[in-house]
Image 1 (cartoon, one colour):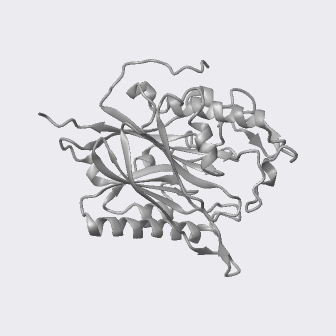
Image 2 (image 1 turned 60 degrees about the vertical axis):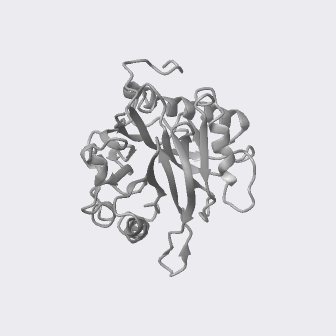
Image 3 (image 1 turned 90 degrees about the vertical axis):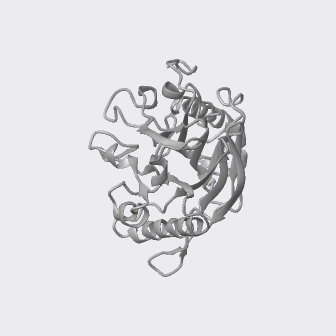
Length: 327
């Protein structure tokens, strides 16, 4: 694939809001406060400057193309997961296909033991940050000890002068089994609802977007029963099929990466944004093109083996229509 975005008809009143799990975007420096030993030049994975810069370039290529076919521009807002620190995001927005997009970065350190956090990229000419904060997700392991996981990133800002709240998530993994760890993701969903209730208590008409790698599918209990209530809509539920998702495990598709939003995005009102469509960005260049894993995400590593791909997840996005106020 050409590294230049492909051109089709542009719709300037459409804006892309996306989410992308970047699959272990670590720098090459040792952080004594995190478990980053796998991502150092002298580790078994041999994570060096060349590989780091190649990954940044590839991720920048992907991000610049998310939603581009419909909007003619890169995402105005992109939530990200699995980033080591703010510096890697600053490096990312300096890459060839993003450097001219005037992206800003929102990032707070999380207590996650591996040192991976969530973050937000935003185009400064379209989105203005009013406030950002980290919200702790408190869960215990099976021994009653705290299980340190990623915080929720809560960003309030103005998208083309309309105030919007964005919650960026990366919920506890299924590493020890989906069922035995489900209570952790339910706790994360409930914490999001606490923040949502806090927002809506001050402003019942607030517009809210919740995005992230939920480590659960749209129909799992944490998402369907605890996060998506009567006041929210999850467009990802219709996208998940046995043939399509954002990650593939043991030949099964999951759609852990999701963007949900308050129902008022369905309402057309001058000077506001309304929902147009949602999709998975799974163009062919992001996929393994042959062999046993054909069609699945072309990832950076398979175990300790370097593959040189993009990520083990596909990005997801929604298109918002900016309803221009008539003069």
